[in-house]
Length: 85
Image 1 (cartoon, rainbow, N blue to C red):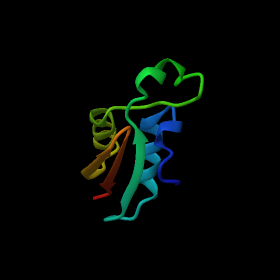
Image 2 (cartoon, rainbow, N blue to C red):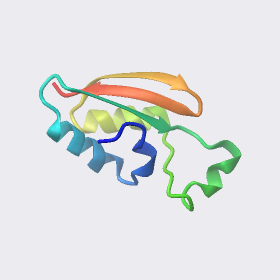
Image 3 (cartoon, rainbow, N blue to C red):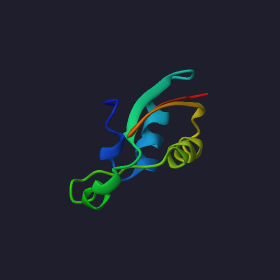
Image 4 (cartoon, rainbow, N blue to C red):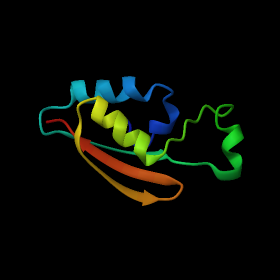
């Protein structure tokens, strides 16, 4: 999976479920995602972009069974990682 493309996926849960499936135990996934587009927000869906707040990314990782969510904010991005137990 290509890091940095999370904001291109409409179905975040499906993406992270697949990440959890293919990672080896102890494997770590690292990606970045747009968290906001500011005044350009209304153009997001037309541009097929799906920015998400950090909380949404964290919750989706939890639902996929990924642990040790860590992040670094670099607005308008968040770089995050999570691990398969």
